[in-house]
Image (cartoon, rainbow, N blue to C red; front, side, top):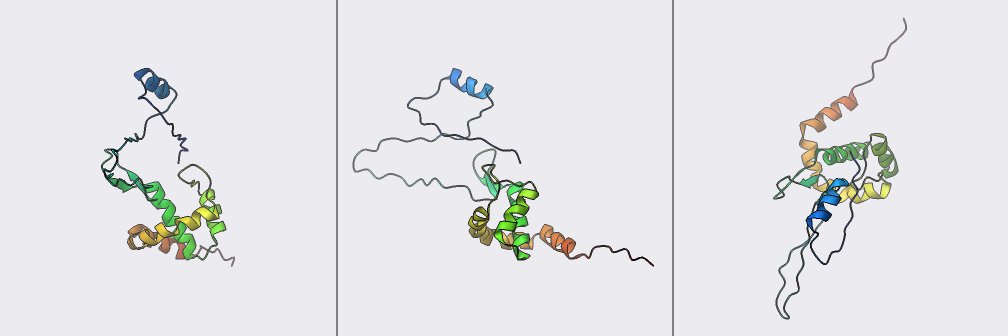
Length: 151
C-alpha cells in the first residue's frame, strides 16, 4: 500500500489557478474542501457531522457513497485470523508489518492501533466470517504440512 502524505491548511481566500497548478505540479491533489460560514445570532445550525470514515471503507470515486476498501478488509481479515489464533496484539502488529500492511497514515501497526481496531472488527466480523474467503483461509491453515518420511 502506498504511503500518503496529507496536510490541512487554513485559508482566508480561495487559491487561484496558479497556486492550484503549482501544487498539482508538485504531486498534490485536492481531496476535500471544508466550508464554514457565520450564523446570524439565534439561528440554529444544521447538524452536519464530520466523522472519520470507518476502517475498511472509503469514499467512492463519485463521492456520493462509501464502498469497501479491499486492502483494509484484508487487514481486518488478517487481524481476525491472528486473534482467533490467540495471538497477542503486539504479535498481531508485528505480523501485519511482516505482511507489508501499514496503517492509513502509512505508519507501522502497533498493539495500541490493533486494540483500537477492535470495535470495528466486532461490527464486520460476521460478514468476514461468512465470506467464502474466510472459509478458504481456515481450510488452508488446517491442512497439515506435507511430511517426507525416510524409509
